[in-house]
Image (cartoon, rainbow, N blue to C red; front, side):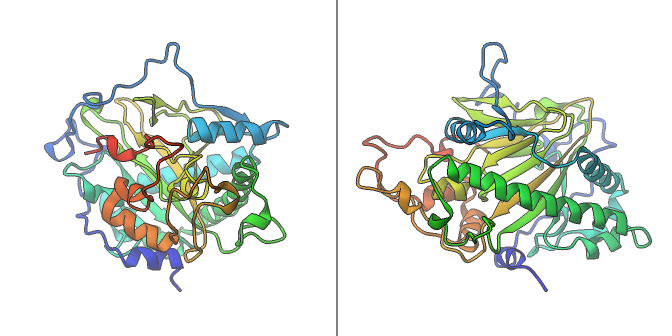
Length: 368
């Protein structure tokens, strides 16, 4: 039975021609993948004297306060002592590399359909750009069994076991992170109708996204994954030992350095809405490099598909009117499929923020 998340994507098919180019074997960037030089519009921040993305030990007694500050000032942070075993992180990375090392014709046997979300293929955001990205992906919603059987007819169980265990652990961590983020705003379970007495989020929906970024002969003319925000509550990313993730802050791009065993957490559009703009979703992208193949695994965490998401009432008063109208994740995914990085602005109410125009407008950033 298809999940509600799958059904939401079926309502908004994306017609992409699967890229048959084997990026591992090309010796120069073809025109189909040639982007303008990356720093033409927005430079990368010089690391000297520049703040770095916060790193938070979840066992720190001050974790709640630190998470709130990071969400407000960065929209992204890294976590350590998160409870995910290093053995599991290594196992999911190993299975991801196993998948992406398959020959192109084999991977295409598990290709994602135009109206689907699960399976192998290009990033859905590719439809908004004239150039292709230097990456390939594999998305898991629900069980990976059917696609794994297509990839490894006789040897699929290990992949499925690892991915299902990882999803189970990520779901618990994502719930814990949600309460830290909401708790830092003074939100309790009584304020969130879809949270139960066990502090869990009933019916929360999620997807697991594996991304592969092969080494590139001219990385300044290629784009791993174009600038975007996530249409989630939060995203948890394991980027192992190879850098490539960058976030946009204060007019420049800042690299999120990979830390052994750490996980990157970023604010998504729906948490921006829930927090009434206090925790802005973060614009981010992935760049590639000349030497190393990079693999990342993202856990995309959202609410039940048909739960009404709006600024939490505790965060709204006469001096802080609601900044966004009510949406469901199903509705918002449709808006994102049509408007991409203009989606959040399109559900924004025309209300000044504290008497000033809100500058947290991702449309001001050129992404094409």
